[in-house]
Length: 100
Image (cartoon, rainbow, N blue to C red):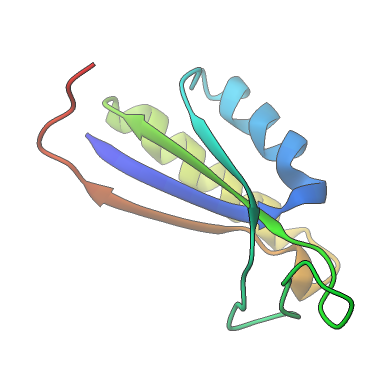
């Protein structure tokens, strides 16, 4: 089982949610108005100097096949962006316990 964090510009959030749904991942949490400074692209700090912000989409996935499909879809998405500001960050790590 993995915990997956996906960071993206707020303008891309609906596209990422569609990807999750196409992967049959129906349970996720969204944290809105996340201020970021990535290694690539411009910061998004929600102010006049650095406008915009990110969202953080989190999910917990038990099935390895769904994890692999999601990772590949995000890699494909990133391969087709026109600017580094549009890159999606995905991070995942193993979790041993999920009580729900």
